[in-house]
Image (cartoon, rainbow, N blue to C red):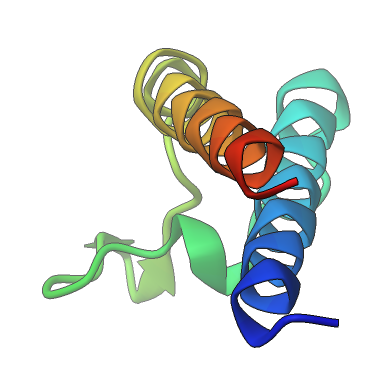
Length: 81
């Protein structure tokens, strides 16, 4: 398998996993401590406990960004085939 194709397939798998975890988080609250939801620089802490991501942020920012990235990766894979 071509190295570029394998890299794109790995990226697609990673994006699909992230989208699935985000959808499960919105439905049931699972994966609240998943590292993919963590902020890069400053942790949100209240009373010494780290806060989970806000559900509106996951729905309106995280999911659209990852779905768009998945669409781009799939289109790139189509071009390679």
